[in-house]
Structures are given as C-alpha cells and as structure tokens.
Image (cartoon, rainbow, N blue to C red; front, side, top):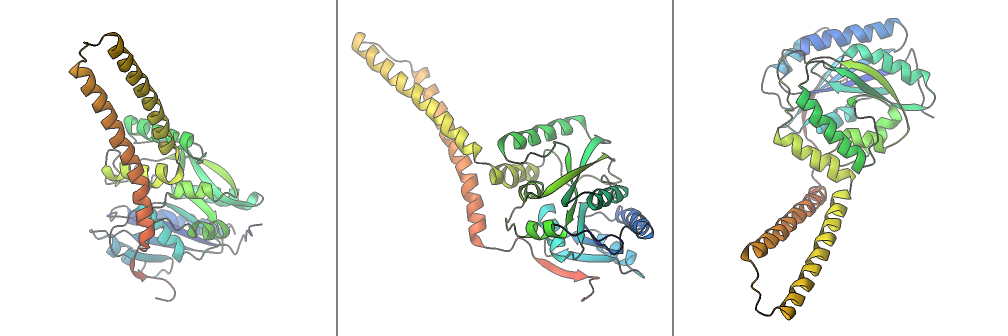
Length: 328
C-alpha cells in the first residue's frame, strides 16, 4: 500500500518550459500561494518546484534565478539541447525527491489552484497512486484543433490499451511508488500519458476547467511535424501493433482479389484468345499495389526505427547543469 503522509508531506512540482520568460513570474507567484496555503492547512509540510529548461533561447533562466533569490523552493535543470517536453518531464522526475510528484505545463492553462484538490483526492482515497485531471471545458482553444485532438485520442483509445477518458490531461499527481515505476520505463521517446496508464495502480480523476494560455504562443502547433511524428512514434506505434495487423489484413484482401483477377484473365484468354487487355487497367492495378507496398514498408519502417533508436543505447536526455538543489 502506498503511504500517504499528511502534514509532513514533501511535495515536488515538476514543470518544463521553453522560452516562457513572460509567464514564469506569474506562474511562480500562483504556485507559491497555492503551496503556502497547503502548508497553512497542514496538507503538506514542504515543497519544491523543479523547472526543467529545454534549452530556452530567451531570458527564462535569468527570470527563474531572480525569482529564486531569498527562497529555497526553486530548482532549475538546464538541458544540453532541446529534447522535448516528455524527455524533460522524465528528467525532472529523476531529480524529484518528494513523497508525491505533481507535473504540469508552464503555460498556466492548467491552473495551480487545482493542486489542493488533487492532493485531497490522493490522501482521502484508499491505496491511490495516481490522480489524473480531466478537462471538463476549455477556453481559448480553436475548435478545429480540439476536433483533431479528439480524433487522435479516440484512435489511441481504440487501437491501444490506453483507456483513459479522452480529456485526461498531462497534469497529474503520482505517488512516490508510481513515480519510481514510471522512471523504470526506459523508452527513448516516452509517451508519458500512455506509460502512466500502463503502470496500472489505482487511479482517480479530478475534473477542472482548462484556462486559456496566459501569454505567448503554444510550442505545440497542431499542424507541426513534431506533433504528428510524436503521435505516430511515441503514442500509436509504441503502444499498438494494430497498424501492422491492418496492413496484413489489407494485403490479404488485395492478394485475394489479385488471385481472382488472375483466374479471370486466364479463363478469358481461354474463351476469347484474341482479347486485348486495357493499358489503363494494368497501370491502375500496378499503382494500387505499389502504393500499398510503399505504405506497408513505411509502417514497418516506423517500428524498425523505434527498435534502432532503442538499440543504440543513447541516454534519453543530457542534463547540462542543475541550480538550486541542496547539493549544488
């Protein structure tokens, strides 16, 4: 059973960012108010905020260092290059030492004021290791983006073992036990939402309203190539073999009709020896079969590429330096 200390609870909050210099002061202020409120109510004993800098090119790091003056609650992890949000989250959790770990985005779409509800759900439940948040509504999100997002997650829900509600967000609380098991997952391209579901344990859900982005632009445009390929490789391919099975099924159906066509042509040749077959039909069939072959090779290639990445044994991320930790 996962232990749940109350008034002596040490809470780690892990946040990743890239070029968020305008948001950080507001975020830190709201987080500190929330954490101090929890301390006053005896819900936690102390806390730390771990900010993972994904190689920002603006003054985000300087802003954080300034915000950390006269306070010992901010820790900074600087990555050696831009690795991506999931890799940075895993790096932050490796350095987190709390009894529970909350991880969230820095754009303030996930309000820090929801954290007390997450802690309450965790502490009051029996043997709960994961508290998920579920977006009941959203502000400031384009309707078409939401439409595509829901389609993507419905595909995952149908084709993989990830069976969480569609609107579950990347704003979660993990017990120390769940955190340790999550860190055992050594994928080079981790899909954390799927991994949290995969490790199991008892999980509960806290509803909340997702606010509009505080300032700046999203670092994950819906039509960005990185979003598309991350969805394919980290989410769909890593958690499902169904794309391969679909291609086997399509290949079987096409092969069956090809066999039928061969029989038809052979019989036609016997009955009408002088028949002339159309060039258009032949080219159409060749293009169809060629397209299916290329598509099949592409899907197999994605799986092989993931194996290749894992086989190289490179580290998932590289930390350049850490600031604000007790031993630094």
